[in-house]
Length: 125
Image 1 (cartoon, rainbow, N blue to C red):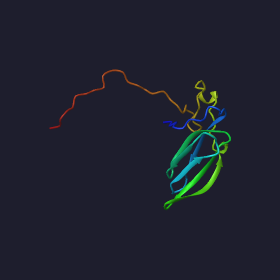
Image 2 (image 1 turned 135 degrees about the vertical axis):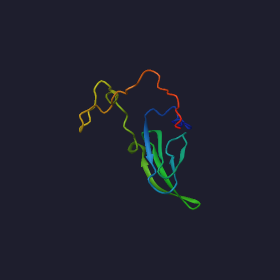
Image 3 (image 1 turned 45 degrees about the vertical axis):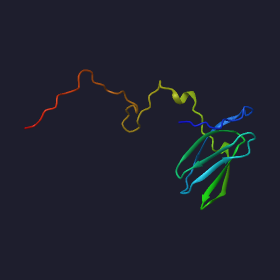
Image 4 (image 1 turned 120 degrees about the vertical axis):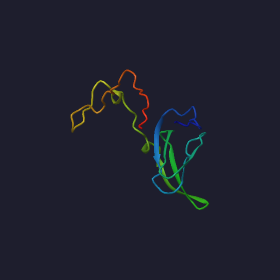
């Protein structure tokens, strides 16, 4: 579920969809502070994935949590965190992809049974 709490300022035209994964065992704080009139800061737990929209020129600061403090451990340009946008050909359902081993379509139709499928309970005795 998308959580847009702090929308981008209206003067920001170029925005990209980004993803950051906390691959450490420590709690991190992800912060973007180089965009005027915009506040973005999120806590990212170990193993958690953070998906967000940001201007192309944004820089994400990663602060790693220690005992009662946090250390700036990395600064990442958001264009390096950009997710690839799907193209219309990615959604093409006309062609069927075949499994290379069985040569059957990977997505097969679901077989459904029509009619009454309920049966009375029989007690053994």
